[in-house]
Length: 492
Ligand code: IMP
Ligand code: MG
Image (cartoon, rainbow, N blue to C red; front, top):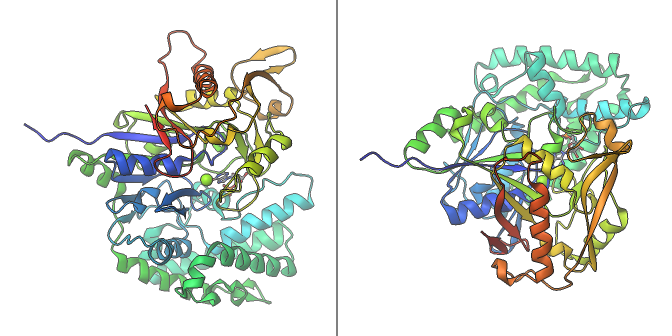
């Protein structure tokens, strides 16, 4: 008899990110034997938080399954890599989280790189948008948009360039930097003063996001002093930058972590290992289907597990859609059910760290009541088979709960999001009000532990998420989250 193949599942966020995918992935790895976790889109703009021994661990690039002692993290070519930030995240795992990732993280050599000039460009474009008439996107300033643009524009710089012949890398880098400096000063109208401010801001951001590693003394704080790359003649000095890139290349090479990720995934599955694909961001930030242009530059929908690994669509058996049982968004752009009062209630009740502040940027998230037009629409985009509802406990104190069932646009009732995102600014959400339960749900571990009104709310929520097509396959519950810890989950 042949060996049994491993199971394959993808986890996809159903709104604007921060649905709590990290916790679902962590739970699957810990309880379900999914040892191999694959990231296939985005970069360190993502933030996945998981609790490890009652401590919150924040990951950005590295698949969150790695916090489990047997977890393996594969970073597919659809994901971008910022080599220094990757290195620091590994250090964070080792020195701060107490996780030894040695031999458990692998990178595809075809990953495109985010270079420092992409980060500068990200910010310079926001400065230019602000100066002009365009609204800012409110990016995470990680350089994601510009790096994906270079990938498509060709040629971008990829990991195999960094790890290959240094002379060739140097040539490519110099040419690219020159192009970028022309863009900054010539096209975007950046001044030298503004460039220096951006370098200063990047230093501050990196120091903040790395403060826990800095405290361990594992990083020399001077690495974040990007003003060392500044020169008054051209703006940025290629030699100093190339020197540092070649140094990090050496360090990454020493990890012996570069693999063909698609092949790795296929081999491991045949060997009986379960494979989990972990989407970064959420469906409404999808570069094509999301609330364009207020989106990220990759595909968070489930299909990107295919192109970003790569594997074909028949490789994936289950699609778990993760939806927070209310709605949040960081950054700019339309948000039909936004309700500041609701946000204050949600943030106010929970003294938990990460209570609706962005993992990556620390910005307070914009909040609103549950919007099932969104989940119904995005569930369809990824053909989800199971729904993981998160953060039910946040709704505990509410006397009653408004739930958006449809949108109204020009006198017409809509079951699905309008395809022109501008219409999202004009829609009127249609609400239905359900009684709250005003009881603590955080100790519930089974469906029957939940107060009756909480069950009624969940039943109604799931019913409203079903595809608006008669005869379509029914989506069932995967789980309902009632608190941040691994065990605070009702699994069906
Ligand atoms: P970028 O991905 O940095 O280009 O930012 C584009 C938009 O996506 C901004 O509104 C960001 O706030 C948002 N965004 C990017 N990554 C995440 C995420 O992981 N969670 C939530 N929002 C995100
Ligand atoms: Mg997040």
